[in-house]
Image 1: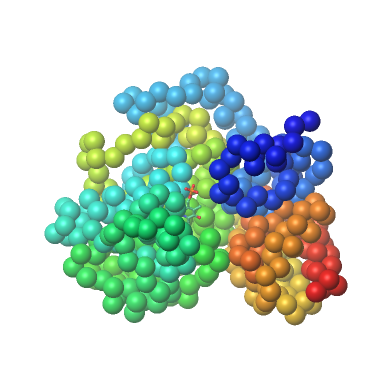
Image 2: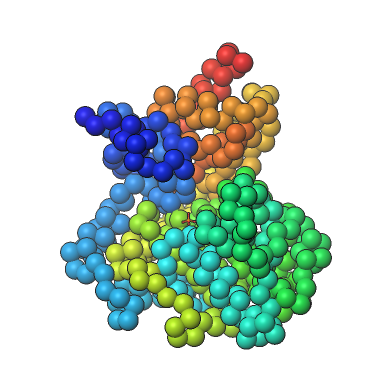
Amino acid sequence: MNNWQELEHKYYMPTFDRIPVTLVKGQGAKVWDDNGKEYLDFVTGIAVNSLGHCHPAVVNAVTEQVKTLIHTSNIFYTIPQLKLAELLVKHSCMDKVFFCNSGTEATEGAVKLARRYGHIHLKGAYEVITGTGSFHGRTLAMVSASGQAKFQEPYIPIPSGFVNVEYNSIEAIKAATTNITCAVMMEPIQGEGGVNLPDDDYLKKVREWCDRKGILLILDEIQTGIGRTGSLFAYEQYGVEPDIMTLAKGLASGIPIGVILAKEKASVFAQGEHGSTFGGNPVACAAGYATLKTIIDSDISLNVKLTGQYLARGLNDLKQRYNFITDIRGRGLLYAMYLNKDIAKQLVLDCLEEGLLVNKLKNNALRFMPPLIIGRDDVDKALDILDKALSDICLVQ
Ligand SMILES: *Cc1c(COP(=O)(O)O)cnc(C)c1O
């Protein structure tokens, strides 16, 4: 058998801190490595495999579409993209969509859209206010948007037109708003930045401020959307509606896709002002439609809430028992466990050994993102493995 991990060292640019396992197969909440060992997946491709691995609805939709039409160009009409567009609009507060291929592309496009709005309605205003600790993607402009030095410093000089201000502070947004501000962009709950929940009334205050100033509110729901936090979109739980929203990760169960959605008033791209070769591809949109339709037509959102609460209780029980666990935070099926030492990597490896995939969010924090269809039995299994890993680490510390 090939030594895949050696091939990676030889041929792949070393940007990823990979976990030493080569995955070859997935089904539901489980994946298997190239030795046939089984794992419970609480990473799901970073909140991507919403319906679990290889869900029949997605497999069938993609298989049929691949046999029928894989790609044309956006200079033609294609049916899967229009069906998905209609479904997204009917089940959100948005009016128009534009499909692209990743989260970064969606947020980058959202910022372009906000700049067009600024040109047309705000006397050329172009600056976008974002939060410290935010993550909006990896293009040069999106590392500027993301309020984390580690993404920006390797690429200085980074594009201008963004101002990163303290997250969860309405005063910081107010102070940063000037006559060149066209939008505020934020994640309803920060994902990569640490599963950071804002105060309950923060988004409402931001919405009110944007309305008062006539600027746009962009919600990046790439991680929080598509049921992950217990409602189809997280904005529903905060009682606000954005002017522009971005989606990607969980929308197509693993087939690459991104979406910019906008209310009518913010849908200001004119012909030729934005585009994409692959965006809205029939196969990706068929996978997106199958995923979204399955979530909407089933009790998956309820499962996210109930099983999410069950997971949270289990994690909080562990916190009671291990004094080096400092915080459990999250919502729905997106949770983080904070530790008072940099032991996240060791815990990830210990869990791996016992058959559980978890994500190192920070050196001192783990993140849990099981598929939205996860059941209590699997949560129990994961908690048992985690418990054992935590108690083992106690012994060696
Ligand atoms: C993952 C993520 C992105 C970037 O998405 P990619 O598909 O990796 O480009 C942007 N914003 C948020 C909130 C994310 O979680």
